[in-house]
Amino acid sequence: MNVIKLLNRASLKRSMAVASIALVSTLTTSTGWAQSLSLSDSILPEQAERQGAAGQEEVNDTPRADWRSGTYGPVSQPPQNPDTLPPFGANLFTGGFRGAMGDGLNPDYKIKPGDQVTVRAWGAFEFDRVLPVDAQGNIFIPGSGPLNVEGQSSQQVDGSVRSAITSVYPDNVEVYTNLQGVQPVAVYVTGYVESPGRYAGTPNDSLLYFLDQAGGIDQDLGSYRQVRVVRNDTTVATVDLYDFLLNGSIARPQFQDGDTIVIEERGPAIAVGGDVHREHRYELIGNQLSGAELVNLARLKSGVSHVLLRGDREDGPLAQYFPIDMFAGQTVRSGDEVLFSSDQRSETIVVEVEGSYYGPSRYALPRDAHLSELLDAIAVPESMTAVESVSIKRESVKEQQAQSLEDSLRRLETTYLGAPSNTNEEAQIRVQEAELIQDFIARASELEPSGRLVVAYDGRISDIRLQDGDVVTIPEISDSMLVSGEVLVPQASVYRPGMSVIDYIEGAGGFTERADDDHILIVRQNGAVENARNVNLRPGDEILVMPAAPTHNLQLASTLTQILYQVAVATKVAVDL
Image (cartoon, rainbow, N blue to C red):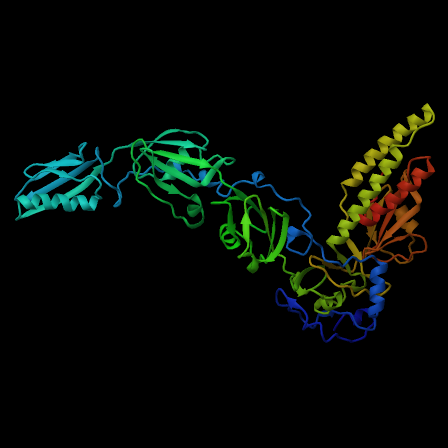
């Protein structure tokens, strides 16, 4: 059974509804106690009438445009200066490299003077001693003489020692060697680092170990791509830290005492932003790179489809917009700004449902889905749902209400507080009113509009197009009446047929001294706000007694009354002056 049995007891179904809706989760209902919340053609306005109603109700159904939200829209922000962004790799030296000193004992370590080698032999030749590597790179083996091991790995040393001993004692001899320890080294770290100096380590410590001891690279001036290891005025290794940041690979030069690590000055850079996980400044090697290289460097969010390239060229400013696959062949130059965007129009929107219904709370719908198509797929408790009071909370409406209220408050402050006074007595009155108005503006500015869009009126529901993020409210039937605003005892009471607005107000203690008994509003369950005069009360209504504008200035009183109405409609709150 669908909602028509609640509205006009007609049993009509829209055949396209089920096919056009994709549910986030399976909708399970029991036919014995649930019915489909459906709109039939007999109660919906015609298409032309739908458009007219939407226009009359000021429905803004244009897509919201925000560059950073991934929807279509202009890029209004000024170009980003690369110097204002953190460099790619800025967090590299927060991982504690300085706390992981190596011992130098690894298969690739090359022996140098000062190291110690343990040599053991047994059988025909007995020997067990720790032999130092002398200044000439030799160790001395009794019976064999000096043996040069400088520059050899531990495995190579084992083979050299074995050959030297067995050349003298060819039979029944077993040999074992082990690198006992290595000489510590002191390495200079200079250039664009935070704390240049001389730092201790082992020959096989990572370059990052020494850089971390020096406080890391200067983020404003230092290069992450030009790191040199200098030995005797000769560059023995050049390291690009981007390889480590992106792939985990890094050159491992074996340090010697007196080596120098030099951080060069930062090279040309570009700014990368938009739909990336972090906005960074990327350093170039040379003055340009390809779009494909930049895509490999930047960490893009999923769904990126377009790229905006902005910069300066010899023939003037450049601003070009490319699909991501066409950007690969473009050239990015020093000083350019690159903005990645998920600028792909989605064919699906997500709408939330709240109130009295069965099933999931979120629905994935086609981008052009209308309210009726959603309501056709929602089952509701037949005797508990006020289907005639459906409403929608929409973000764009909320923003419009907030902007309109802000504009009204600004006009009030500008027009009244800037008006001159003719007499001292008038000036004193204005001072008092000014304090009152400023306090009112401060409190009204803190209120948050509801963004409620009235779609149900007089037994009809406007079949408007839904927007991504809409919240459809299907209220439960209420038996209460809420009385609030300028009454002595704001309260909720049971709805009683035949009682008038004044009866409910007197039941709440009557009007306060600040009440404006000529301005009483009725807030319906569907979000509509009406004047209490000649209104038939319904269960679930809220009686809102407005405050009177405390001024004898008729123009000011009229302006304040209008704003009070505006606040009440947007927020369902009567702000007391």
